[in-house]
Amino acid sequence: MPPFAPFLSLLIAFIGTTSADIFMANASLPDSWVDGQPINAAGQAFWVGGSPSTYCPSIVGANCPDATAQTIIIAGFSALDVEVPGGQQIYVNVNGALGFTQAHSAVVPTGAYIGGFFNLTYMSDCSTPRTVINWKSPDGSSEGILACPTKPSGPNVTVSYQLYAKTPAFNLTNCDGGVPVDGLTATYLSSPAPYGAWQYV
Ligand SMILES: *[C@@H]1O[C@H](CO)[C@@H](O)[C@H](O)[C@H]1NC(C)=O
Ligand SMILES: *[C@@H]1O[C@H](CO)[C@@H](O)[C@H](O)[C@H]1NC(C)=O
Ligand SMILES: *[C@@H]1O[C@H](CO)[C@@H](O)[C@H](O)[C@H]1NC(C)=O
Ligand SMILES: *[C@@H]1O[C@H](CO)[C@@H](O)[C@H](O)[C@H]1NC(C)=O
Image 1 (cartoon, helix red, strand yellow):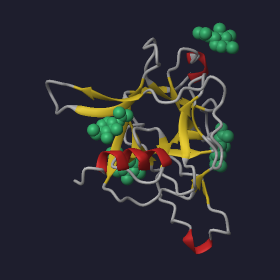
Image 2: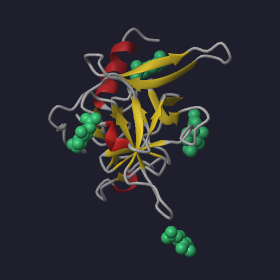
Image 3: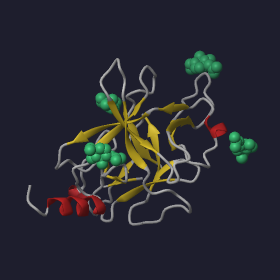
């Protein structure tokens, strides 16, 4: 590795293009329906399952990257793997809902958390250690990631599960029928990896 490599990868991660930390995230909760479900960005939020919601302006035309089937995340869950200049940063709303900045904007909602994601390794006598990505509030008072239904389940009702971090203000009563996952499994892509999309919307 050339001597400038660490600086270069830091810089590149910051501007949201390529880095050594490029991955797709899936929900982790062994023996649950939610285990292995892909995490996707859409509508300024993150969801369990479904598809990413992407956009590329017509002016970019033939240079638009092909959007991948699953959302690609970079740099320790801090940003989306997009080609749009400026990138798109990931944040956690005060109420816990994960979100991401719109293209061409650095605006995050008031009080939103930047960062807080960390690698958590589960040790067990009966299986090999498992590392997942989890979230902890800056003061360490609350921790965890949940998949919360957006409407009550019922016959013929398709329920979408939205991803939340357990922030201090997270109100569990908003997550009836939800699933506290034990984290998100990252599948790392080798660098250079393709962009996940021009931008997520
Ligand atoms: C994540 O989800 C995708 C899409 O369903 C699947 O192809 C992949 O195997 C999953 N990865 C893990 C680690 O569960
Ligand atoms: C988790 O570990 C990987 C591999 O060491 C590292 O690249 C990544 O940044 C870490 N993620 C977080 C959220 O700390
Ligand atoms: C659910 O959908 C099926 C097929 O459209 C219909 O026969 C059934 O009555 C519906 N059940 C309820 C509770 O709406
Ligand atoms: C959650 O929020 C609702 C509505 O704001 C409130 O009535 C309820 O007491 C809160 N529950 C908890 C556990 O804070």
